[in-house]
Length: 188
Image 1 (cartoon, rainbow, N blue to C red):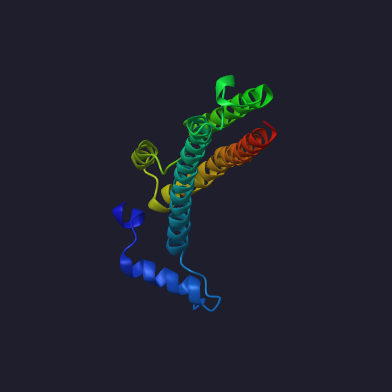
Image 2 (tube, rainbow, N blue to C red):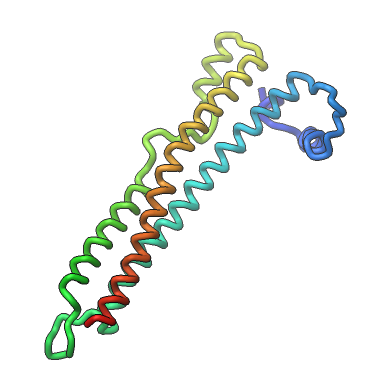
């Protein structure tokens, strides 16, 4: 089992040479090599998706931080003035619009940060043990694991795409927030 689940360094180099240089000359790879290649590609895809989701969440935290800081900083340096004794006050329409934008940005950020109900990280140990106990060959098990990971990757893509769109909308609303601050400063 360990032989199937882990590629030796030498085997990886051979596969890279075959893929990168096309040295096979049209000769078919043995089934076990092709299956190992598919299995490795599926594992790598799941790992890349996990990294993408983590990077998206890190960017979302930065987006939320910037949105909150923009409002806080504006108030702190006196751009948003609510006292008539200190000069012109911040327009009421802009205050309500800013509040709405911050709430929308916060909601979109929470959606991106919220855990996915179903996210596939790799093959299930329970699945492997169940199929080993049933006496399946390593090739059958490897093919089944690869197919499960491919299907899991498709489900992951859906969740990541939705969160990516929410992040993009959040970034657009952040630009709108900056525009409202600038406009309110000029108009007041």
